[in-house]
Amino acid sequence: MIGMKSTSNCGRMSSFSSINMVGRKPINSCNSFVRMSSCLSKTSSCNSFGRMSSRLKSSDGISRRCSRNLINSASAAGGAAVERPVSSSQNTPLYIGLDVGTQGVKALCYNAETKEIVGRGAASFGLLPTNIKGRAEQHPSSWIKGCAEATQKAIEGLDPAARAQIRGVGVSGQQHGMVVLDSSKQVLRPAKLWCDVEAADEAAELSRAHGRTIVPSFTGAKLLWLKRHEPEVFARVRHVMLPHDYVNFWLTGRIVAEAGDASGTTYYDMYNKKWDPAAMALIDEKLHLWVPELIGSNDIVGTLTSEASSALGLPQDAIVSSGSGDNAMSALGVGCVDPGQMMLSLGTSGTLFAVTEVPLLDPSGAVCPFADATGKGLPLMCTLNCTMPPQEIASSFGMTHPQLTELAQQPENAQPGCGGVSFLPYLVGERTPNWPRATGALLGLTPGVLSRPGLLYRAALEGASFSLLAGLHRMLQLGREHGTPDHALLSPSELRLVGGGARNPLWQRIIADSFQLPIRLPVELETAALGGALQAAACHQGFDVAEYIRQNPTKLSEKIVRPDPSVQELYEAAFERHVSLGNTLFAGLHA
Image (cartoon, rainbow, N blue to C red; front, side):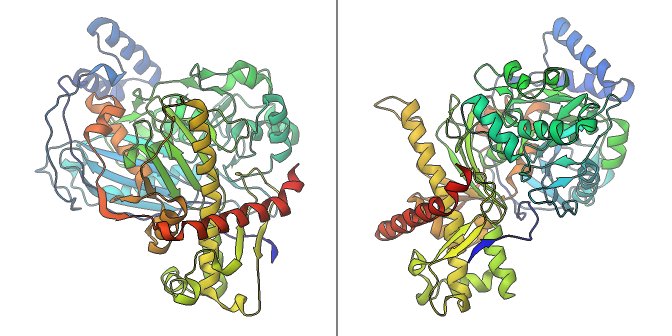
């Protein structure tokens, strides 16, 4: 069966859990700054905020950058996290983490003293309806509405005194989305999302100009598409930003960007940590006038505007941290801030990334040279089809994932490689490999196979996993090339697994055995929202973000899924078949 397409929306599938962490306090906090920003939020515009924070730095030696504060070595051990309402007797700082995804917004309320999640909220939305192939768009107003709804739900169990203790907000956003504003800072058109691949031709053009592969997901390709296909809209553009940048703008009134999200645009210089004028000129000679001011990962954007404060139900003096793209924020939430740590996310998109001291530039484009949310490299590979293929099987047979998982573990369906059945999972085209015109394909069919939902479900899980495994092979190769003969830049000892698919025990086993790496899961699977809350806490309290994460290690599940060496050869053969079939069917379409 070749030419399979999904009818599902792009997005991430996730669930909420709880978290336990260990905390340390700084010797010197930014209390002076926090008190001043509190006053500013009530009396000043964001421009006044910027001027006042500059005066603070010059007169008191206190910068908005919290990284200069020292970290005390004292720590407090925490037990298992318990979620419960916060009462007015708990005079401790609380922080909101927002994850603005493709299917909705998730919000967490985090108590920095007890290391507990004390409130959760969610709001759902979808894509704008379209019949245009490759298009995936949303209006930014849906994100704002979702942030308000999710935050209100997250704090509904808090009494007024506890709500007054909410000190900060951190935003995680879906990456690569193109948001364009006019001279009045009004949105000109719906945002084109990460899973929008209409800009395939423009991506190919930019790839030739850059000398490396640029995928249609990236913002730069979308901007060039806009210039070519909607010139009347492009002529009115005066501000270009990413989804989380837009949410921060709504929260504070300030238009800024940071490295983690900016590194997914095509026009950010990873090595010099600034916008790249030459890369911007490939899109338009005026683009350098439209990109936001860049701030650091430890910087505070500002405090809430009166409109945002009212909509969210939060104190107006709550600070907003820099935020970042969802993958960088998930890395914070799962505790990946040191070189060599690796994480795999099984959502609607599949992402594999690791922390490195320096950027990894891959001419093939399979591994993207992104930045993390702490100032390091975050080489990442992403697939567009991860939880979508198994969901297609579930929808086709009218069965639940637990039912299909049980069937897939029956002896007749349990062999790695599915008896020669291969599910090439490219239902919405693919980003890695860069095959936007590919489709799903089910191969190796014999009589009776189409009536075996358990086998097909396992084939879908394996197909999605093998696409990610190809990324691991490429990432390790780059690590060897960028390292030294005695030290590879990447040598992971385990994978931290997150996302909606991470809850499936069969998928955990398939990943562990095919990757031949132990699998560990964080207790809190909503890692992007948690990363936002932790970043807000770090900046408000005067910590360097990376150091704060180190001193507040993410609670991991006690369960470790260890690889079975006896099935390694079976998986290697199935993986090689997956790669060969994909190249045979689709590589020629994109030559």
